[in-house]
Length: 116
Image 1: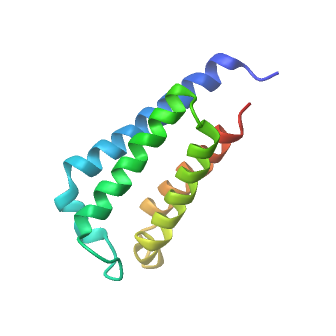
Image 2: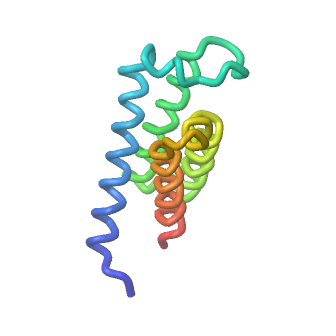
């Protein structure tokens, strides 16, 4: 049996980090709007706010254990879409930090979602 306390602490810290990323999307929407690919329709700030809201909602789901599995899988999918849509170009040019960060967080979300 896995130790419960360390796993729960890791889960809570992950949710708090995701919530912080969501908060940052709301706080810095103007600065982040340049990251939105040109092929996305509408105002770039709207997409930043949508992603921020998804992050905050996923964090709430993880912390409250309400629909946690679905929230974690959707969060992982969102993080991978962002990794490829936003950070792939920089990664291909040698700056893979954000691409790898998103990929690692997506895999952590899957692990948390799989935890019984």
